[in-house]
Length: 300
Image (cartoon, rainbow, N blue to C red; front, top):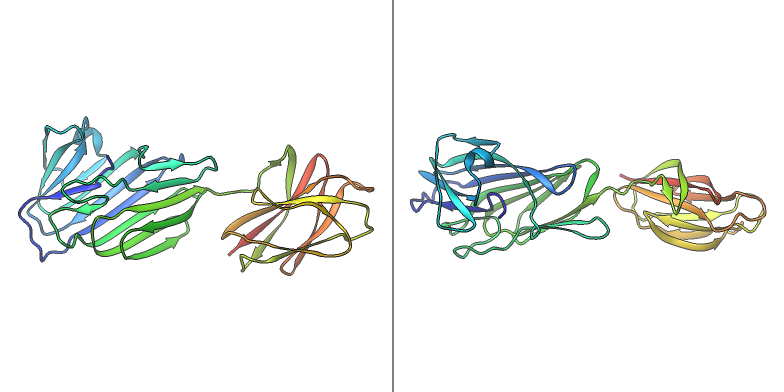
């Protein structure tokens, strides 16, 4: 059961008071475990929270406020009950994502989706006993610097804000939210590609994610044949390098991209050599049967 995904409020409610939830996921370096901070503010006289079965407040929370609470074991196979006097609450827990929350495919893409377990007609991230749910909701993810967000979505209206390795959703008068967030390790230039050593020849900063790559021979044509890989995918195979320029449209992602020249032969005069022009910058790359040179294309 997702920590704090189910929030039940005592039958005594004060509808005029704002109900504000701030939830922060701080993803650890393994990409599958996390530290979660929750803060809930309301005008309620008391709050009830679920704790997973088998846990107690002392071994479940790293931090909890207020420290004055009551704990009740329930006849329920999934959770027990924690009760606070007053309408404000904050806590920190450390957990691993469960199998029904996080999927990792063969490419390393992590897909998180809030489980849709309906209880009393509510599901996902919700506030029970309220027609409008949360007056304000801040839902934040912070991932390690070597990860990147791929996509994000939610089934309610609100505002998304991305700042480097943090992703925030802000909603007003929302309830029963299902989030889907995809992230993965950043694709960095490999040190070895197809059993050949890779050396980065130059970094090129670009403002567009759709530049044109221009490839040509800079000297005497000697039968060089190359292939070109962009972010691990082939964009040209068996290209004969001549003095006649060849243009290849690129589709880059924001941030770092890597382009590797791979020699299919060594021509008459090894190693293979080709001029690669992206934007206004032209760089001569070399490749042999043992090594390949690369460009790092950085989209700002």
